Length: 349
Image (cartoon, rainbow, N blue to C red; front, side, top):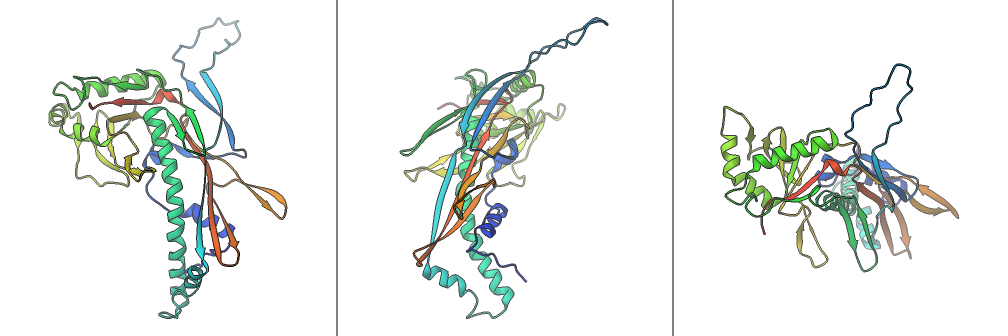
């Protein structure tokens, strides 16, 4: 028998929304480790710069040499918050309670249909919050910052990407859609730069749609992939696709993906989460880069309650004629290791 979700109980619905699966948050899943919870909604965000200095030799009678730590820049940030409400009218709730009563008297079937009703609306609420979180992750890796300017709130979180270091531009004549563009040279340079900076070689490149088109049609790439003597890579346009990204193939040990996720802005215009002209170069699951989430504060029986949950859903009755679900979450996909990223403009305007 199916388990009946209690859409009138905050605890039951919070547990359900945290388990509900929505769209595939590709960038979050690939590049950020598991979420880290905090008991406060402000965190000290640190961005490190790696040291490539050698260990010092010492004499037998000498004590240890004091190490100079990696350079770290700290900033205190408030975890960005979303808080949205979904209202059910009394008539909708009556329909919910009547699921299956006319056409099916099987208790298990009734519970299953009611669960579908609940899950469908949970998915709607959660998908909006998750898309915003994915949006922040895409902004972080492509621009090095999360900048928000709304009528009610504005803030900027800077991950210290430097021009010509983390944010680069191949320039006219070197773009992938130019006849003289040389993708293999670019890949070697990216691997070398990131390896030198943080001691680990990149293993993934995420391409905007125009960059992806230039990649799969570039003659240099086609020739390289066809050179069996060197076996530089493979291009697989028929590979199984997953969620918001299409797997394109592997070159020099790096997996290439085309990113397709969009969102609608305030003018209802569809916009790419990853800029169409960008190649984002990095390595997967860097433990220094992770999602932080913060607490939700509620008053329960006149006492302050701190709830540490990735997503929290409150249920409230409104004037005996409606019920509201409010989904609240505070989160930030944070880059603590800027040196592990290169965001490069690879096609011309």
